[in-house]
Image (cartoon, rainbow, N blue to C red; front, side):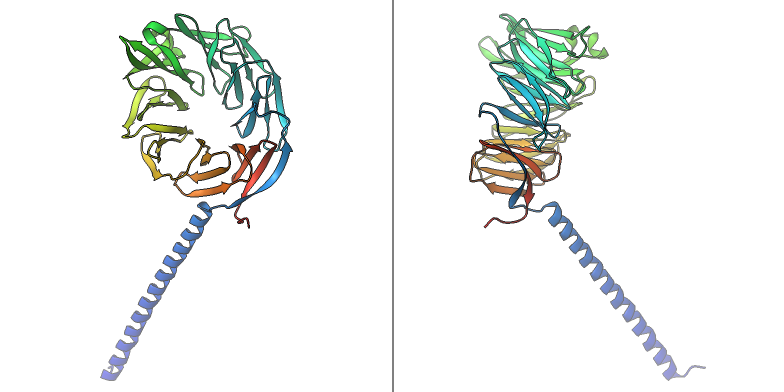
Length: 392
């Protein structure tokens, strides 16, 4: 039988074991929390790293005038002017060339396809990246052009009493003009903006007209597939915006339409027929709009930046305290530019790169490579990579 002393010693041993277990568990827990915090800090530092400079990877001298225009598409650079267009890699390699003569060229791109139309003229060219372009000839002046991922093109042409929207498949010589959609200026007004879906099967148009001396804005949805063929002029829906001017409508992806107003926006889902998702009205007027296939963004005239996902959920609201000339979304970033400066932000509001140049910058274009961009000034086209080094 155990003595009293032996029992006391046994209890002390058990207490020490329990105390050791508690201490060990506490230490492990603290170490785990510290490790998780350190890991989160490192990941956050990597994800939200701020860059301070850049390294030039390739540089090519410009062989053109300042009247030439550039834009990014499909990870490449579209260069176009009054007398031709070309597709260029970020390294400066020319992928395709096309020549024409236009007084007022405007460009659109979707996927690998590019359309260049002569506003006020009667010609447009469609490029697929592998030839010198396919000509579309009109009998009436062109006012707008759009292109889809399959090469389907939409052109708005203007007559005295009516406008028409022509839908083409320029690579099908047997039936290049697919549809003609008439509009009536007196009844509908003028189409101030159109947008074609990525698959080329849906169209949205903003019409501006005057009724009894009052401005009226209407948005019309068209289905160019089987659903729309049973409808008058392919019309499957519309929105009467009243006196609110809607200068822009856009398929931000193949099935989502955004209608941009003066002080708000509407989102519609459109697989076949339009279905309203969300609408928002701001207290202040819209100064700038941006979009990609995941987000839409606005800068109001009180310098508030607002970003929404395509369900209408607000993902960022932030005041901006700097001037800019252009702002747009890439796949990864929000890019603000002016002649001498650039600020790149992430969609969580963190600044990625804030830089002041010692030369005038005409364009800063994203590439498909992470943290790589193309800077175009008056003299050179440079492919650059962001650097963490501060310049002295």
